Length: 476
Ligand code: NAI
Ligand code: MG
Image (tube, rainbow, N blue to C red; front, side, top):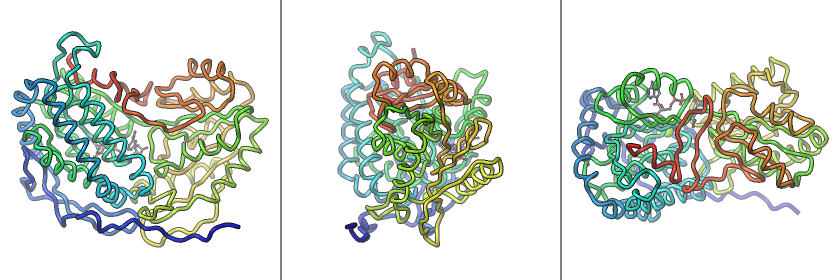
C-alpha cells in the first residue's frame, strides 16, 4: 500500500530578509552612488523578496579600491592567521546553515532537500578545506613561497549561488588575494547574507566585497584596470565576451562555462541503480547544472528496459514548493530561463524528436517545467547539441563502446561524463577516451572540495577545487 502524501514544509520564518540591501564594500553596506536598485523575486511564487542596490561604475571602482587597499595587509598575514578567519567563516556557515538553506531555496527556487543536504554542507566543506591549505602553500607544488595575484574580480551564476561563491572566495582568500564578487541578478540574497557572515567572523574590511547588479556591472568589474584576475562561471557566450575584453591585458582568467554531458549506460549496468543516476544527473537542481547528464546514451539492447524503468521513476518525482521537504524538483529560476527551456523543447519536437513527460500538476504562480525526456533524438538536433539548462533529457542509443565514445565526444563542450557498467576495465578505457574534465563511474553529480573540477573545449579552462584550484590564485 502506498502512503498518502502529506506536505512537510520547512518554516520560512527561520530567516529574516530585510526589505532592502546595499552593496558590501570595505566592510560596510551602502547604497549605489546613483541610487539605482533592482528586485529579487522568489521564482516559486513571483513574490518580491527584497530590493537590492545596483552597482554602477563608481561603486565598482570603490569596491576594487577597497580590495586593493586590504590586499597589502591580508597578503602579508601569516597563512595560519588567514586560516583562522576561514575556519571561523566555515563554522558560522554551519551554525547558520538552516537560515541559509531557506534563504537559498526562496531566492533560487531549488528544493530545501538540496540546499540543506547538498549546497550548505559543501559550502562549509570548501571553507574548511581551503582553510587547511592557507599555511601550507609552500607544499602545494607551486614553489617554496608562492605569491597571491592581488585583487580577484569574481562573477558567479544563479544555479548554485552560495556554493559558487564558496568555490571562488575560499581558495582566493587562502592564497592571500582579496576579492570583489558579483552574484547573479536573480539570486543576490545569499551572497549578501554571506557579507554579514564576513563581518561576524571579524574578517578585515575590504578583503571580501560583494557588489550586486546585472551583466553591465559584471562587465565593469572585468574591465576595471586594477584587477589582477577574473574568475567567471556562467554561459559560454559571456565567457567568450570576457575573454575578448581582457585579451591583451595581463589579467589572469579562469572560465567555467556550459556543458552537454553524456551519461552512458552499458547493457551490463544494474538498471535500478543506473536509473537513479540518470534521474540525479538531469533532474537534480531542476537541471540547472553545468555538468548535468543531459544526453543519455543507452546501449541499444537495453534501451527499452531502461526507458521503461526511467519513466516509471519519473512518475514519482514531486514537482512543487521548494520549501516542502518532499519536493524533488523546484521552480525554474527565472521567466527568461523558462522561456529558453520552452523554446528549445519546442525545437526538439519541430525537428522530429518524441517528447514525453509524466502527468503532474504544476503550481499556478511561479515558473515551472515538468521533468521531460525526448526519444528519437539524433546528434544533429538542437536538443542534443545546445545546453538546455532545465529538467530535460535527450536520449540517444549506441551499439559498441567505440560508438558511445564517438557520440559522447561529439559536442563543443567537455565538462563531465558518466559511465554505468560492471566492468572496471571498460570504465578505465572509457575515461581515457572521453574528453571531459570530470568522469563519474556508476555515480553522477558527486562533488567534493578535494577534487578538481573544470572543462575541456568550450566548457572553459582552469580548475576549481582541490590543490589544482590554488593554482588559479597564485602567481605561478
Ligand atoms: P550569464 O552568463 O549571462 O550570467 C552569469 C553571470 O554573468 C551573472 O552574474 C551575470 O550577471 C554575469 N554577466 C552577464 N553578462 C556579463 C558580461 N558581459 N560581463 C560580465 N559578467 C556578465 O548566464 P544567464 O543569461 O543567466 O544564462 C544563460 C545560459 O547560460 C543558461 O541557459 C545556461 O545554458 C548557461 N549558464 C551556465 C552556467 C554554468 O554553471 N556553466 C550558469 C548559468 C548559466
Ligand atoms: Mg531571486
